[in-house]
Length: 53
Image (cartoon, rainbow, N blue to C red; front, side, top):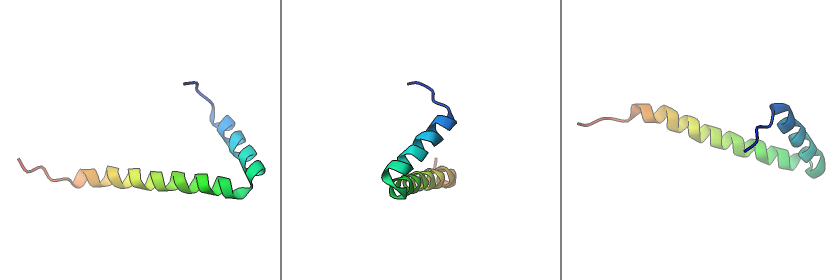
């Protein structure tokens, strides 16, 4: 897997937004936001797990 700098990602996102309109970019942002919320909830809630030994 090749490393691509953040500027290349932003350029690709801008190109996709121009080609498809703002709907595609909004969908990508929403998916990333939902995945981030799920991972944050998992990380926070795993600390509250009881250890009944």
